[in-house]
Length: 300
Image (spheres, rainbow, N blue to C red):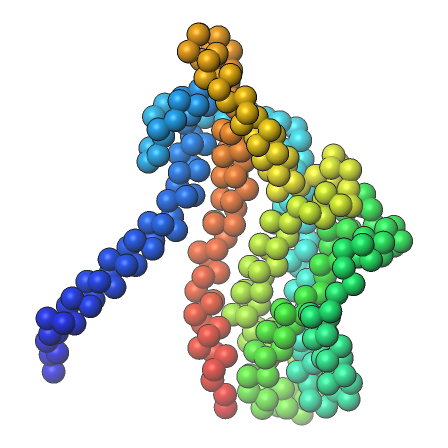
């Protein structure tokens, strides 16, 4: 049976499409403009008026960024802390979530309440810093991993997903002689791939975007991260804004030819370099968000 849309339905659909198109443009344009400025010549960017397409295409900004030894080190450290942080965080979060999903665990309610309390009550930044320093983690790579090893919110999300899985699969495995580690590794984890993929993305974004721990607990040299370097360039760019008129006067007088890049252009280039890896990973995990929503609502 063919359903013919009324004139009102067509108008409503058209309005929805227009609104979604406008929202999409508003969402995408800021990053697009950052990318355009990153690929535009730094001297040309000073003149202004670059919005939708590079007016003078140049790779000098990226060449300057990627040839810096500090940026190379920061990029390596960011990748290492993201990969190690995701692996260690997933192991700890999923194990705790599986334990808390077991209704026969006698301390289940007590531990869960203690975990939830930590979500609302915090000692603050100073006690946190003192604990990290007393444990000797300052200026050590482990400071990027150990403090972020457990996330109560992720544990609760994974626990809820595990509780929605058919209990009969675990009972059948027990009858066949499987212990808790086998059930966890060979039954729970394969069935929890959607929620694991989602939490993987969350942990990866947290680790990749983190910079404040670098500022607090390291000297900012050997253990520097890409986001920390971006913050440093941002501060330099902010300080250089007051000199933008001088740069324009140099450019007008012909002395600006000596300028290859500016803090503003470097900021745009580093922003692109720091954002692209997450944008590449996200489409491969996107499908699991939808699958996780549907599987989490089915119970047998």
